[in-house]
Length: 206
Image 1 (tube, rainbow, N blue to C red):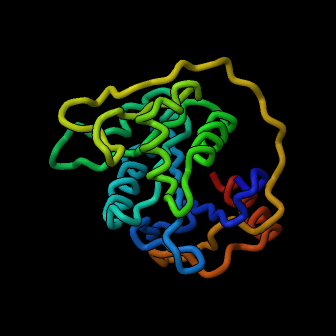
Image 2: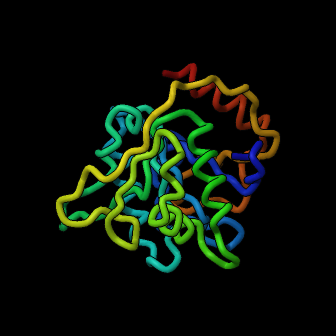
Image 3: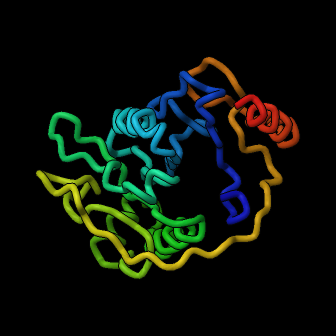
């Protein structure tokens, strides 16, 4: 995301920030335009809890919720609820590598009007068919809010393409949320080099 020009990006790792709640998040005093969650199947329930909490944000200000990671690749429909008692869902699941997500963002920016949110741009792109040519997406066509309605849990899936390896490059600006017990985001991200060293130590602890 940083390499694509989204320098106001914050990475929150649950092993560092167990109390983080999306409903409390703000960057520079604003609710972010995008909330992206990535999960393995092992962590899918915690991921769904984060999505449900994000839906506590007032609909007028709620960010676009994008689900990804291994669980989205193999079980993308798990991110969409058909239970009226628990209606919170992702807006869209990305079932491919990073270029699929960036293709999605590119389409949304191309249809986004002045002053529009990314979520309203998504609804417009979805309803107009502008997302049909982006491979590897799963989303519901039902409901103006982008949420599935009734028993429609299967939604719409665009065809997948063979994955391709993207060039690996790390972000050069601070993006990681510092470890802590807070529910919201810190005013400043963890310095890049400090975050890299801490991440290496964390990976070695498993």
